[in-house]
Length: 376
Ligand code: CMC
Image (tube, rainbow, N blue to C red; front, top):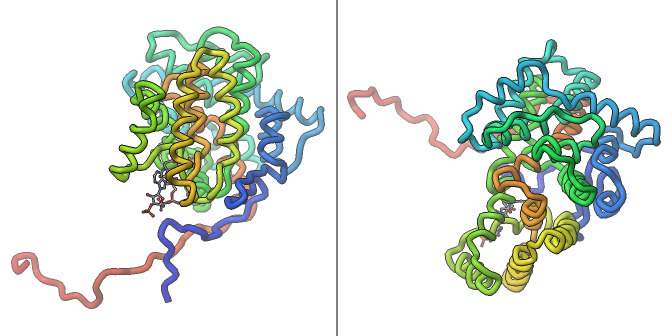
């Protein structure tokens, strides 16, 4: 008897201690802690420790973890040169996927798959991925890469390597909140991809590479760039409603809305909406925020009954724009953070592995005749 479910909706394919989602209630917790509490009180480093250890760290543990992460900021020897060889026309997500894959070639023991080895590799990739993105963005602007500054936290260090100047506390905190809210999200498509790949006992780099490839799709993390493109196409707030209504009439999907799991407002969207509004005020981008808010109101009127609400990507677009990031860096930002979640899932999978190998419902013919080629 067939039990085929298109898109695997509702299928439970893994166990995790990392994040819990109640889609009907619009609730997300990391290890039981509501995402809003983490966004208000935690740091990205502490959140990663939480996800990887199933508990908050003590002060000493957080200091030790932060020190280890900072020690992994620098790119392995030869990687900086490799980034410079990437065509400056490449999309950053293609570049990032390729460079994370290349990190395996700079690892003396890339296939080590013990839980300890996977943690060490994850820490290295998490720590140095920002240097890859920053170095590439500077390379395409004709600028030299800036070495990481291990006196800075994850978020400040990335913005420093990207822009060549230390970010303000407000910008650092805003970026950190983005990193916290994007760090993990159950068995989403890219996380599933990572778990599928590591379940063959391949290697951490292959699993992360697959995950990055998945994330860039417009139905997944790539939606944040789609949102920004839409906002750019709408000339002013008063044109927002007509623009969205035209899209609806053409039966097009509005990027940044809808979710397989949430049938209420994504709690990350609620956090990022507040952040986007504040940043828009601070950076003179209120038009962008107001446009976004107008789109949300129209969508609520048209689609709330169908359970389609803003997701994490909707207000992250305004937030990243206000932080000063170029549009094609939005999805890479999602990836920098989600490396934490993917890695945690890879570690969970390795700790209790069984090969993923689902079945397919065969819908073709049976006992078909083999017709010789000159008779077809
Ligand atoms: N705009 C308009 N209609 C939509 C949208 C949307 N954004 N999302 C879903 N629908 C409609 C869809 O057309 C379909 O209608 P009908 O039943 O009349 O054919 C119905 O809702 C169900 O859609 P589905 O594609 O079967 O639902 P799903 O659970 O597979 O969709 C989704 C999830 C995220 C792919 C979808 O909502 C979507 O395409 N959203 C836009 C892209 C987006 O914002 N993606 C980011 C997701 S959250 C962050 C992340 O995971 O990366």
